[in-house]
Image (tube, rainbow, N blue to C red; front, side):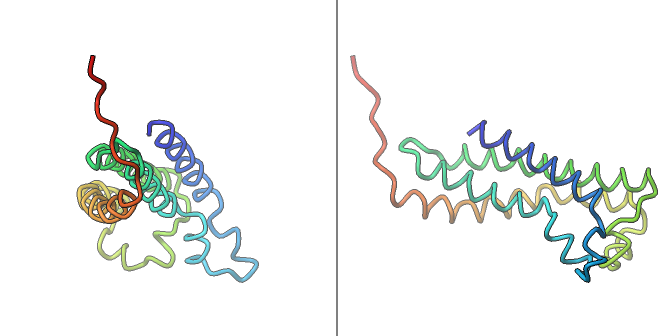
Length: 155
């Protein structure tokens, strides 16, 4: 499972960097900023990783739900750290961000980038709970078709 985690973490980091530098790159083609945001979104990486983690652990003969939940939780923390770092980096560089565009309502809730970043920090627990609940469903579906667990060898 650690191989999947580290690959997904690297992909999320690359997508986060692309998102920072590619904001508005599709605007001249008439693609709205909101659509561009979702095309270069680490949320997509988070969702795909959630499914992969719980399916892989669910299909293992000796797979455990708590193992999948722990790996997902670690990935959710990494995801939020990337988001928080991106928010603070855009504030520091004075870059134009999605925060100033289609998500204007977020600006009303969080008047500063630091407040916005802290909102994401506070949301980590909620994200983990939601992911684990969704993961439980995915895990249960994946577990239905797996081979029975191998009993430990006796000497």
